[in-house]
Length: 249
Image: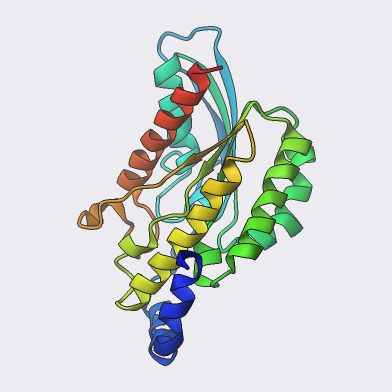
C-alpha cells in the first residue's frame, strides 16, 4: 500500500496540486548550472599511494545547480572528503544535467560514458527529484534504475557504486502544502525502490540523504536545490557509507 500512497493522496487533491505545481514553477527562481571546470584533482597535504578516480552521474545537483562553481558542488566536495580521510589523490569528474531523470540518463547520458571515462574506481549516481515531480511509477523507476546500474557496471566496471537516496522532497521550502507532503511521500516511495534495487548488487551501496527540515540554510535560495552547506553535509553522509563498505573489502 505504501508504494501507492502518494497516488492515493493525490487523487482527491489533483486540481489543487496541479495549480500549486504550476504556480511553484512560475515563482521558483531558475538557477544556472555551476561555473568552472567539471573535473579536477584533490591532493592532500601528506599524500599516500592511495588513489581514487571518482565519477558522479546525476541530475541538477551534480551539474552544480544551487552553488557558485563545481568546487562547491557534490562531486568535488565528496572528492575533498575522500582526499582528507585517506590522504589520497582523488581525480573527480562530474557528469550532470539539469532536469535529467532516469529515462533521459539512459537515452542520452550513459551512451557517452565509455568515451569520456575509461577508468573509474568509484561512481556516485544521484537522481530522483525529477522522477518524483513527474510522478514516475515505482515499477518504471525500478526498471530504469536497474538499467542505469547495469550499464554503469558493464561500461565502467567500477569497484563501488554509491546510489544516493532520492532527496527528501518533504524538506524543500519552495513547495507549498499539500504539494510538499504528496511529493515527499512519492520521493519516499521511490527511495524505497532504490534501497531494494541496491540490495541486488554486491558493489552498490544506497546512501540515504538527510536534511533538517528546519534548517533552510541547507538549501539554495530557490528552495529546491542544496546550498554549499547542504552539499557539504551530503558529502559527509556519502563518506560514512563509503568508508564502512570500503573497509569491509
